[in-house]
Length: 124
Image (cartoon, rainbow, N blue to C red; front, side):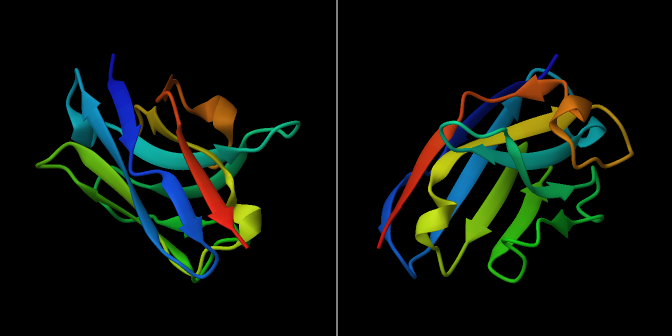
């Protein structure tokens, strides 16, 4: 198993930036493809970004493309989500997720491990 802990959330003004981190422990981090998802009250968990075990294969939801960047540092067992030009509609709880596969995925059901989430609030 792998354990995931997100950090870096907070309150930011519209147009600002935040960097989320997700620290993994328990198994070989490079065995896992990683993803970021978010959820707002009353909505399903929404895909944000994904990255392969090697750092390639990045892919983004249209709503964040050009503003968010996913990256990983396998030496530090950490995946990041750099967020720029934040909008009020980016307000959500952000979750990182792990999938023990070389195949990346964009749906929540394809990920077996989840962090507890970190709140991002963008004020307009």
